[in-house]
Amino acid sequence: MLAASTLCMAICACNVLPVGGLPAGSTSGADSPAGGAVPGSTPSVGATALEQLSLERLNRARLRPAAEAAANGIAIDEGIPGQIDASPKPAVALNAQLNQSARGHSQDMLARNYFEHDTPEGVSPFTRMNNAGYIFITAGENLAWRGTTGFLDEPSTAEAQHVDLFVDSTIPGRGHRKTMLNAAFREVGISVIRGRFTENGTVFDSLMQTQDFGTVPNSPTFVLGVVYTDHNGNGRYDFNEGVPGAAVTLGDVVKNTNAGGGYSFAISQPGAYTIKFPGNKSQALDVAAGNANIKVDLVSGSTIVVNLGLGDLN
Image (cartoon, rainbow, N blue to C red; front, top):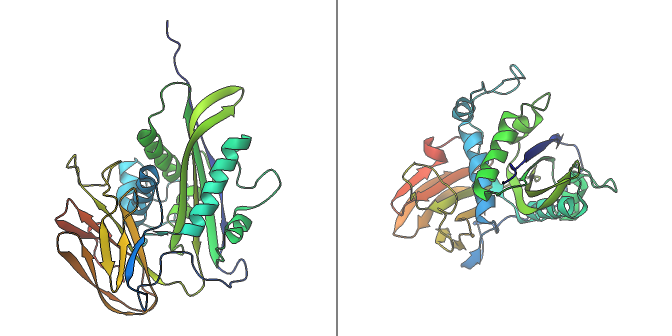
């Protein structure tokens, strides 16, 4: 007789440091600026297919928060009346330094079997981000883990973690949802790592996810997105639909998409740009100083979608 498997999950009450919380001073560790950059092909900020999936779900929630809430059976400000509105929030771009901070923390929590924002030595998320070279004017962090004593379906588990963080029903103040929809954030690092985690004496096959959010002083505008093939025809990005290694061009810079099909450019100079995708697909962009980030996706090699169909947010 087979024993029934046990499922377990947790999300950790999020930390957010408001704008001006720490002295500013460095530059972003994101992709090279498109304005004035040296021509040539360079890789995009790295992400696994699971991490790109988590980024796509995060940015879907940011750009279409009302629809995300409705899909999960809640009002956008459920539990915190009037504290979140349904207006679109610009997508966030992956940052290599924040990825480093997030990945190190996910690995450490699995290796030493704890689930907290601060390490056992008391190192905070904000110190970890600084140690990775990311000097911010505002920052935040979300954590989630799910595990099972049975079969762990990685994509379904990552999807469930997104819902855990967005619905946030176990956390008074709904801090995870507020962090996900914080319009002040422009960049994020995401780490989704599989490993063994022990809870109350039971060992779970688990996914540990860390999301580190931030914004640097005088932040550039990020043009970001994903190249994917909608294999199942459901009109959204799903696991393993990303096209890795696709060449995306903005100005004189060529980026090769990461393992999940994602890319990003940092625009340091305002102006008119054209983003070019494989198959001679292109999209004109007009970027002014201080503009919101712009998400531009190429779907199934033929359709360009800007900000998940919302168009310009500025």
